[in-house]
Structure formats: C-alpha cells, structure tokens
Amino acid sequence: MIFAVSTSSPFVSVAVFSTEGETLFSGELESRQEASNACLQLLEQSGLDVLQGTLFLADLGPGSFTGTRVGVTLAKTLAWAANGECAGALAFDLISVGKTVVFPSRRGEWFIRPPGGEVTRNESLPQCDYLGFGPSIEDPVYPHAKRFASLLGHLDRMAPEALVPVYLIDPSISLPKQPLSRVGGQT
Image 1 (cartoon, helix red, strand yellow):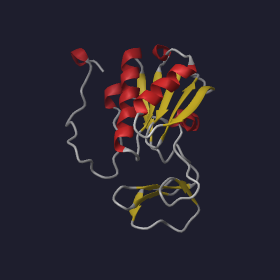
Image 2 (cartoon, rainbow, N blue to C red):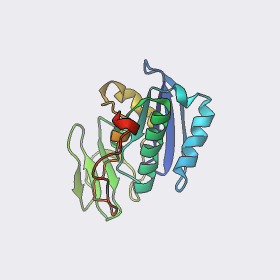
Image 3 (tube, rainbow, N blue to C red):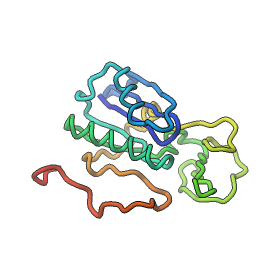
C-alpha cells in the first residue's frame, strides 16, 4: 500500500492507494494547529495497517512551515517503521499540474507556478486564471493527498532520511548539514 499525507494548508488530508494506484481511502480535516493529530485520526479512519505500507508520500510545501514539517516527519517515521520508502511532491502539484497555482507568503508576496514552469515570487497577485489559496482568493483550492494518484508514476523514491521539505524562503532555523542515516550506515 501507498500512504500519502498533505499538511501544508489549513486542511490536512490523507490518502491510501494500492500499489496499482487505486484509491483505497481519502479524507481531510480542518486543522490549523494539530496537523499530526489530524493525520493520525485520518489514518485510523482508513482502517488500514500503516505497517503494510511500502511507500509513504508527503506534501513538501510551500505552505505552513510547521505543518509541512509535520507531514514530512510523519511520512519518514512511518516509512522507517514499515521499512518502506518515501517520496514527495510540491503543494503546487497537489493543487493542479495543468493550471497556474498561486500561494501567499507571510512576507506579503505571492509564489506563482505556471504549468510546467518554475516558481517565481511576486509582490502582487497576478492577473491570470489560477488556482490557489490565500487571504484574497475567493474560492481557495488546497493541496490534497488524493492528488498524489496522478503523480505516482513520476515520483522519485528515496530512503526516509533523504526526504526533506522544500523551502521557497530561507527558514529562520538552522538545517542539518547532512541527513541522519540508519543505524550501521545502511540506508
């Protein structure tokens, strides 16, 4: 089984897929402060054994700094416990691969990613057809773990310790110089 989590927005989501890509479970909860608890509730609701997972997917951001770290850490921990692998996708892709996606930053800027393009920063909201979430977008669309289904064949699998969030603005914390490895140097 493949377990996926998205925690970069105010809505936490979990999806579970068969190894063939069939959706076995999908759910979401609004959770602005307790992303880990919401993920665990949704995993319990699925009724599926996470230790049967072979691949654990996480939303790598951008979005809530702490929320994103919670999702990445949860995916890594579950993968480690199940002796599985990890992979991740940007929140942009968990909203839409085929449309321009826009995210607000806490610094009053907007992150913009056109289909197939690079992420740019802009001081004003662009005048274009877009999807995204933020304080001045009327119908927000949030990242959702169920959208990993369309990405399954395109994700780079890795050892749990190699999965890290993607920061579009330097975080105000120090980052490890080298990811920790499994005991005995085996990854």
